[in-house]
Image (tube, rainbow, N blue to C red; front, side, top):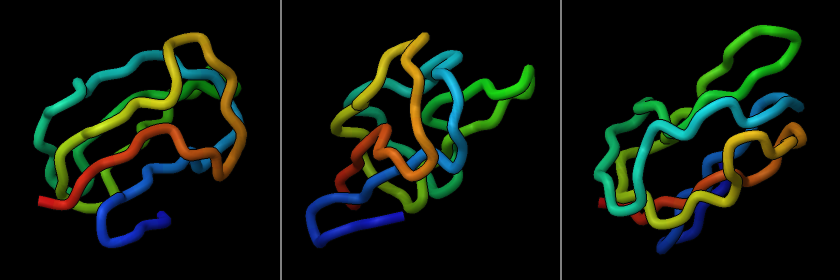
Amino acid sequence: MSETKATIEAKSEITGRVFQVEARIGQTLAADDTIMVLESMKMEIPVVAPRAGVLREICVVPEDNVEEGQVVARLSPT
C-alpha cells in the first residue's frame, strides 16, 4: 500500500489477470472491502481497499494483465 494525504493506492499482490471489478467509482469502501478480483493459476484473489475511502479511479479493466505491485485503483480518504 502506498499513499499520500490525498490518495490511497490499492496494488496487486500478484501477477495475474483482472477477472472482475466489483466496486464502482464514487463508492465508499471500508478497509478490506473488495475492489476487484484477480485470477492467477485458476485461483481467484481479491484486491481490497487498504483503508476506508471513496473509490476515485480504477486503473484496469477485466481481462487486463497486471504485475505484482501495480497500482490497480485509487481512493480518497474518508
